[in-house]
Length: 336
Image 1 (cartoon, rainbow, N blue to C red):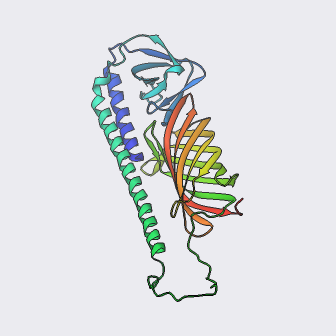
Image 2: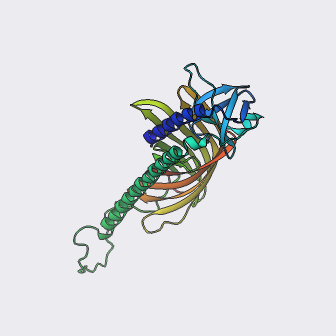
Image 3: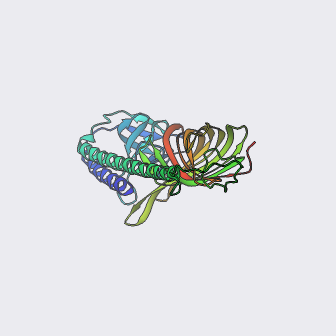
């Protein structure tokens, strides 16, 4: 996806320069940056790459508007080039009226093709994630089949009658209801930002839980997600999200060979992005409800697969995505 995004952005930049030159004789809306400064983004989304920062009072020519974002042409840089980008409406004010769609006919088709390629890449990422989920399910079913069948010869119906108690050797068969006082989890985390259509393939998650009642735990989590875009092996842009949250978790009674649970966590999230040497970050509120299952491997160790929906309010906007965590959970202590 990083290569597709870079190629699409480069195509849009090039076509926008030609469109801006061809529209020299047309009247375009003129905007002025207000406040301290404003960030110019590749797309109308706070988490998208930042092209550059412009100072207060800078004049921008608008060529389109989408919700609370303006598509603008930046002033000529030191190389005599004008780039397009997106700026939030609350960072600018209109100083001259005009037709905001006068120059869009030059590259509408190219923009649609770029969007189609990004959508196709997103669909491919979703299919890859589904294949991984199916492999985990197949492994769990194979494990259950081995445990159910037991050692060879267990089907023999001839059982001698015993009148005295027989001491059986301790069984290593995993149990779903492992007594616990503390739970520790660590593993891989995949995050998909549904608001901006971005996938964060590099991620991790850590958590600890303290048992408060037989079914309710108090949980604290830390997670990080990262994505980057490279051109010819050189990193040109990156984005990351770090979340710190805590809250209650409820575990249902064990069902066959696994234990389901649900949790609601609240905390803070830090969103950072960097592009062409320009850094931007914001911190805000995070709400993270989710659910999952623990499949025991041995008495103190279980495989955890969890899914949660994360909603973040940062930088003046709301963003929603889903996160999938997979890893090992270890229990320590004794049950209450």
